[in-house]
Length: 508
Image (tube, rainbow, N blue to C red; front, side, top):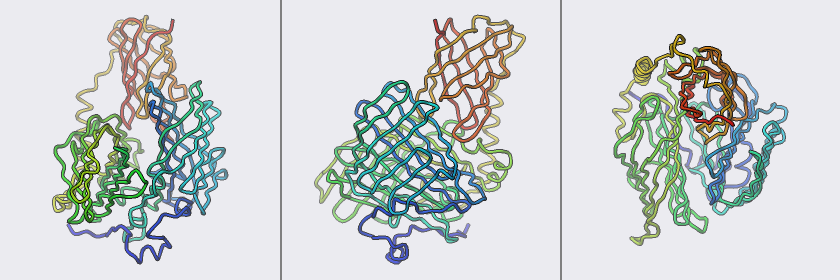
């Protein structure tokens, strides 16, 4: 198959000149507003922080949802936050904001959405989040300890003019401040990160898949954003990579696949939920002058998988089916190991646990674009059809409903303090059950909301019910199935985007 729509990274001298970008240094205005509210446009500013004692904070300011964007002009802004405590529990929510309360500055990062804001000049940033409904307040300062990084101009562009971007404004920084949530006040001191992205088309218009991750190892910061473009654009691989030294300067960087780059994948593992073959171990080798870097990622555990295809309505699924689009995103624990040498002298040879993300936008996940002919010869629509057929068959064989005529379980009634394992961390919640024969009613509290138990059945074999859950910006039907043992319960909540587990004990 011949590519009918090209894609390239904009890193030529004429690209810098046309965009008014200094090729030698990132400037503060690049972290300001870069997009508008035209149909299909999106922009977001992402921040995270972690402390030595195991607290993590993630915040994202976005002008529009990242997928299935509106065909109408205008913003639908929201702020997402997640605070995970050292014991694994977390507080997370999405704050939706009226477009009239959204202000985006252009001279530097100056984002205001309602009472929430994020401001900075590439060196120093202030972040403020307040959610009165959940009694959450976040006030943090981020001070950069590394030079900003972008691949080329930060732009990838298709032949039709659509763009996808990535600007790593703060690859590494110091964070301090206060977080009030979950009934406690936390004094935060640790490390942080901030990047900025904007685009004019949905991700599947550009990419078949990507692997994104970063790691702090032996005083060095590793950045990896390994893209493979769509079948229509030639399945071109862009292994964006950088190592930033303790002094904050880039030691080695890469943007395209050249003779100075070698990438190998050793084995695959199936993504939970759909079985796409994701890399088990990836090995990257880069050379620039007298500097060489070998970076190895060994996956350890997939701890979250979100199936965005299953979150669509019937019309959206039909549209995606025509092109074989099947977007899923997974996050993994991994062991990342860096060996960095200069003129044969070893500068770093160390590793440790890190997290990385795999975004797969089509059913035919392209492992390595070096096998380009095979990738171009794969029909994504047929691959999607086969995957959906396989998943439906598996679901049909595994699903077994409870018999409502079974023996009742009146001892299930009561209030349970629950621990719910969500993709963003552990949530403490409360489950209240009322039992009338084999009919189960009640409520389920988690992620700051109360959901009504619907279509509930409780028997000696177990219990099942449904809830109409709000997940991010969507309402979705979720099914719950579980069992009781004495005063303890456990179960699984299955929604279109994936599953979460929970366990609880009856309150005394």
